[in-house]
Length: 548
Image (cartoon, rainbow, N blue to C red; front, side, top):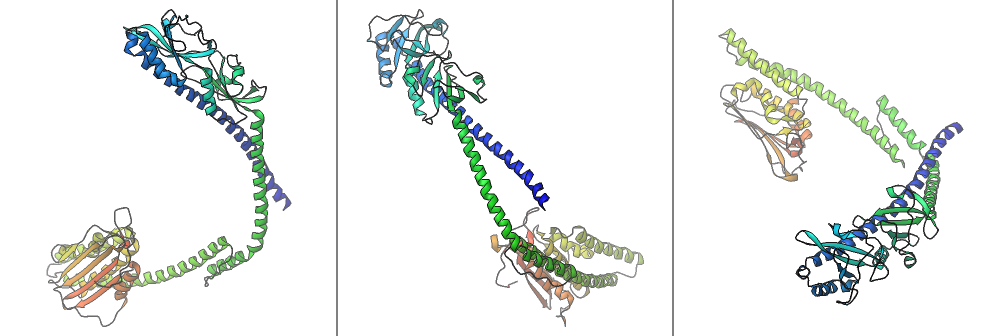
């Protein structure tokens, strides 16, 4: 026993250890992923902001006043568009000479602009610079610039002077956790903005952590505050700037330890509950198992099976299954007896049918007698083959009726009328109705409309109603044959035509032995049929009335 416990415990403990290690690693990866996503979110916000600035510049660059060289009007338009945003525009020619600058009153002498990292004569599309010391602002700024074209050639460059404080406001909007740090640098590694100690670090060079360029690997190093951190990074696609977000390595390890501790506590709690539950179940499970064992023995010995419900649902399920198996066994035995009686009854009916066939055959011409007699015997065999080969799986009513009347197939369309929609019967219904039709056909050939040359037979069926009230109707009506008389007693044939059909189809069956001819009608819920070739119809509720 002890060895069994050890054999179970060692793999379980190994699995729990591996799961704990995986959980801690997953928590580290999750936190690192949040840092990387934070950097990507900041970079996307920067790109959206810069695209907005560039859109303003491109709008100003198309003003007619600029094409006419009316700098004063351009100055007023730029000041009106940008003043409320805290932005400044400046216009320069290809030599870098500023023509207007909204930081200063219009008309004052302006210097040349230097320090930007692009040749204005080669400026073919919008450009965002790195950090430079502005010749007018006299402090670190960045510039977003667009070319002003005339006749397809660059004539001016229109720029926005961007303050690092604007980028600091953007970082503050992110509401990063207190221990996180976010830093934005230009393509040369010069700091543009920082979520903490911004003013002290703007314009300083930052050395990117080694190996961080890929962005998908956990990199640990010291940040500007001297903390050991893990980094996440993302590039700004509009400007070429870089965004760095860092989280203390200690915070990552704390999160992993907390996740591991919670996992251990949960496992310990469930283990204790499981042990207590196992002990309790072991104390109460023996009685239900003993009852189930007794029921199984009774089933095997063919005795009556009983099972009293217990507190164990699984044992109840086994006990109920054994009781149901005993019921099904008894039902199967009854079915076998019924089928044995049916085989005996059908054999007699078959002989009676053969006799009726023989009596109706002309005897003057032996060859004609043999030919017609053989044809009817073959038709009778084909009817039986249809029922057996289909295994009563979705038999069409028309096929079922024709198979039972196969020996009278030359009369179909003249003395025999068969009419109804394409309806397929469920297996129990097909079996019961097929046996009833066989009985009706046999009786008709012996005593009814098919026993002479004048009688007629009409077989019809239909589906009526909608939804849960939908019903299947089947009618067998004989007329113009010999006078019909009620039987002196109800034998096994009546049981097949009425009791078996009513029980199998939950149906109402009416048999009328009218002098003009036998009438047999069935009214059953539509659940005994298939509404389509492959789909079973919905079950219909049984009506309270018994009208035929």
